[in-house]
Image (tube, rainbow, N blue to C red; front, top):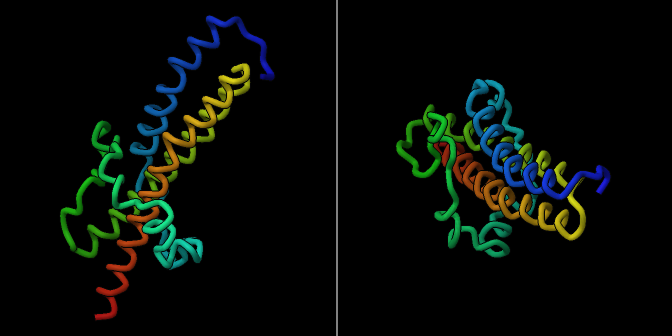
Length: 160
């Protein structure tokens, strides 16, 4: 803890601030233009272990739990990533852009929530760090996994 605050302030900042960070960043990500997240190049920055699918299928068993993750984008009239609604190439490209938007949102949320340790004494700071990871990392994994699968579909489609 680097900032000394009264306990009531710490409780209020954390109880109100963390949900506000989640919602504000989700709203901001939805409000930003798709061009901010669009990538023309085929460089998608996946780790070798991700490309094989082993990480998602064997290490994280993603198919078992991904259906339980929330998608906040529709709350802000954004693009729903709950289901694939079309196999049209333009739709798939938009979906890929939206997975980047979601991943960006969760990375920023994770970083900003980690700032709350500045005024939270131990062991509460550890709770915040663990929460930040548990609230965002599964979503990041799912978005990367989905993007990887969609890129494979597009690659197969473009080879035909």
